[in-house]
Length: 273
Length: 258
Image (tube, rainbow over all chains, first blue to last red):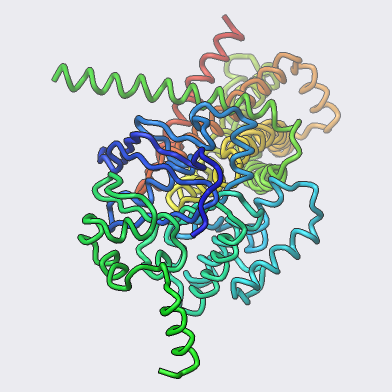
């Protein structure tokens, strides 16, 4: 398991309280997401996962508490620091949140136009086309979001979040609305992000995603981080036992493979067992 | 009862302060808009096309009708008081100083004010505003400022347009009631027109444009989560704009005549 070489967490929330419509969603939530690692936070519907992610990405202002990016309080960001943070980050929304009044090309190209204005329009279009192709999107780039299925919209949303190669990727349930083939394409993209040591913070209920990628696994319950730590520790914790998806991960056992396991895996792939 | 009144007053005061802060931010970002090379120019052009160009026809029809009506009423009433010579002065004052900017502002509020409030409200509900934030685009500078500049520019241009068509409408009626050569009509009209009339109309147009654009964008952003809030934001944008336009009209008129 790769470990971060940087002591300062990429993103840290300290005692964050956030509410919406008079309801408290996060109750003094604290968590530190290590730089260069893949963190997954799981939790039941309504537990505050999406709000936690939006506070971490500076998209929702907390009622109290603080959010830090590389040790700097995001509430005190200057305009320049804010822009630098946005250039270094990307966000995948749970419901895609594409801009309805413009084309798919313009949706995905926007981060490049904002953060890499020196790129020519033909290079921008080519970058968008290549990334969408990698994700298995095969519709026209001139279409409007409303003309796509919800799964395709999700793929476009993921492309928009990573087109400018951010150092930190925030992802809210990136495989929701996707069929298995499309989800596999997203997993390939996540594998690439992980291999280039991008800090990835995902909130999801997809146990397969957590099993494959999570360096750090967290559990959020009723607006508080009930557990957060290395994958095996969290899966083995008492808190995890209370969640079906985590219990499923626990049933799959540790990911630390022994030589015997590896041999067994190879034999099964060859059809020897 | 007293507690409820106090809570309501506190809420209104905080909403007013928030609105003032919003207006300050709009002005600040407007000053920066032309210095930045950014993607907001397309939004500005689209806004001028929608608010200005597409409203030309309705504004022209209204202006001709109003100009004609003033002339019909004036030419029947003024001779009774032996003041026929005041026709051109009344025409200039009513159209240029008052009805031109006022009716244009009402048309823009009804067309663009509702459109802006509901469009931004829909974007809030669909998380599109958060998406702009996530890619580093300030929603005030990218979404509000182009609409602000677009509405103000359109308001100024449409007011001048209304004045021209209002006076043209009057000329058409003059031909029916008392045929007058166009040169004589224009000479009489221009002799009654002062720089103050033009400036007064343009100042009102500028103020009304600011009111409509700021109120509409503010109401659009006041939507929180539910799609049912979107039409409410549109209704509020129209109602509040109308009230503030009338209040601003009284204040500007008082400043000119007091």
